[in-house]
Length: 421
Figure 1 (cartoon, rainbow, N blue to C red):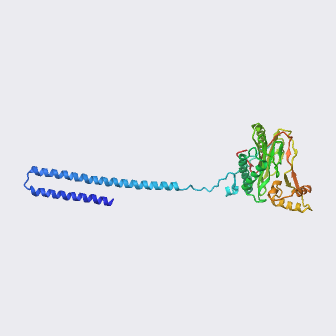
Figure 2 (cartoon, rainbow, N blue to C red):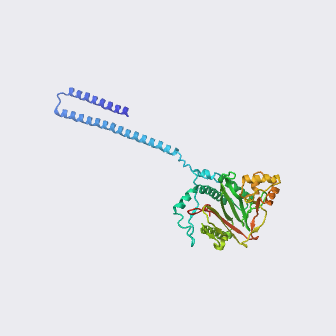
Figure 3 (cartoon, helix red, strand yellow):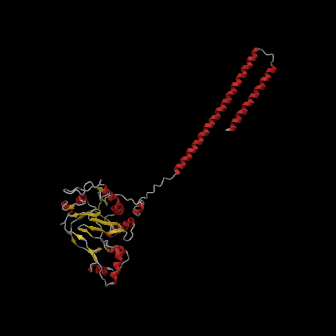
């Protein structure tokens, strides 16, 4: 810009000098000219001066335009540079991890602050002639007790979130034509990862139930079981998770034929009715014949599983089929064992399951072999209780829905409640 201005000034100076020389020559050559000649000279001089001023103004205008264009060019370049920077700028990491599909990230890593999603909150029903459930949500003493028990709530909510995410995936995964072993092992693999299994501190609460049709409960396939899920089967998926022994027990029913819809809806409504009527000091006897269960509670901080079955058969179940579920009898004291294999198997059970239910597939998973005689011996002496499948009449269909509720000092929390049921 400075060089351009210097050139313009030099041009104007040269033209002025030429004009002065020319005027002097005219004066010398025509000193005695007439007045008309003098006016002519003045007019000519004025015209050249105007032409010269026009050129100067033109150069100035060009310089001003150049300044504007340069400024705009710099601004455009700056904006373009900023635009490129904005494009390259990465989105801020919120720090919240997202679950994979299939789910593999432990729930504890998804909620590193230790605050897990709360279940459905419901007020207690107020029973006639009994006011123990009145004003519990506003009572300051009960609210203080609630806060004191928060660590318990967080443990069981962690187990509930692992259950919710596992069943959400399995509902999309399970299809007719799959073997029951594949279904159970896929579910258990996912649940173990989400609960971050650690022996007795965290893991599965009991074997995955996948009872079909007339079999209502306690069926899980043993090794080599070839059973395949059919398109007309009614399958009850019942599994549990736990943190430090605080169990989430929840179940749902899968069907692939709409003819079973009314059966499932009836059982689901019955389960929700049982949840609604449950509470502190509430006796559930005959809460509709749909649930056929009596539940009585006189203490706070109790966990209950509201488990409802519906059947198109007689509604009466009996032991049937090959046993797969076993559970240690916690009331049995010391029992001397003579068989070395029984002692070794009992040690494995104590270390990995304690008093939680387990199945033969889980013993296989731990590398146990040739243990059936020892298992029978532990049952015969009363250390273990076998839990055979519970079945109604053959040819009928049974359905199941289940939720776990916590009777808190201030309210009732349906911990296992989700968007699905």
